Length: 318
Image (cartoon, rainbow, N blue to C red; front, top):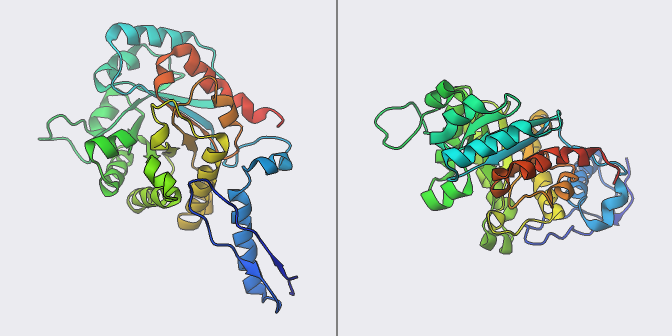
C-alpha cells in the first residue's frame, strides 16, 4: 500500500518532554512501516487533543476510560473530633450524584470515628500504610490493621511522603503490592516537581513512578492513579485543564503500551492539586480526567460535594 508523502509538525508542550515526530518522504512506505506510522500518529493526536485549537473536535465531552468517576478527599494531618464530627454531618446530608465513587481519608486516629458515623455512600481510606505485615515497626500501621478497622482504600506515593518523608519509588511500589494483597484498593500518586516540569521532565518523572508500581503490583483491578503535580499541591496554583489532560493522556498511553490496552481503559486516572469548587467543572470536562484527589477543599463538606457532583460536566455538550 502506497502512502502519500507528507510531514507532521511536532505538538508543543509547555514544560513537557517533546516527542520525536515521524516524517514521511518518498519513496512510498511498506505496509508495516505505514502501520507503525499511523499508530504513532494516533498517539500524537491524542497527546495534542487538549490544545485550544482542537476543542471543537468532539461535540460531547466524555470519559476516555471505562471506569466510574472517582473523587477522594485527603484530609491530611487536619481535624479534631469536633471539626470532623461537623464535617461528617455535612457529608451525610449532602446530595451526591450516584455515578461517582466517593472516598475520604481521615488521619489514622479518626478513622474509627469516621467509619462508625459516616454514610455508607462514602468509603474510607487511610493516608498511608506499612510495606508489610505488622510487628516491631514503631509508628507504622499495617494493611491488616486497616482492613480490620474497615478501610477500603489507602493512598500511597503522595508527594509529601516522597519529598518530605523520603520514600522512594521502589519502596512505594512494594507498599502498593502488599496493600493490594490485603484486599485494599490503592490510590497511587505520581507527579513532578516544578523544577522537573520547567526542565521538560514531566513525562519522564511520571513514567518512572508508574513503572515502579507496574513492576510490583499483581493486578491493576483495584488501583486508581492520581496525577498530582507537586507545584500545584496546597499552593493555590492549579494545572490548567489542558496541562492536566496532556499528562493524563500520556499516562493512559503509557499503560496501554507497557501494561495492556484493557488496563489503560479500566484504570481511573484522577487529578489532584488545588482542586476546588470553582475549577473542578472545567477540569472534569477533560476526557482523560476520571475524577479528583482533593486536599484542602475536602475539609469543607458543601464544597467537596460540589467537586463530587462535577461529574455532571462529563454529560454536558462542549
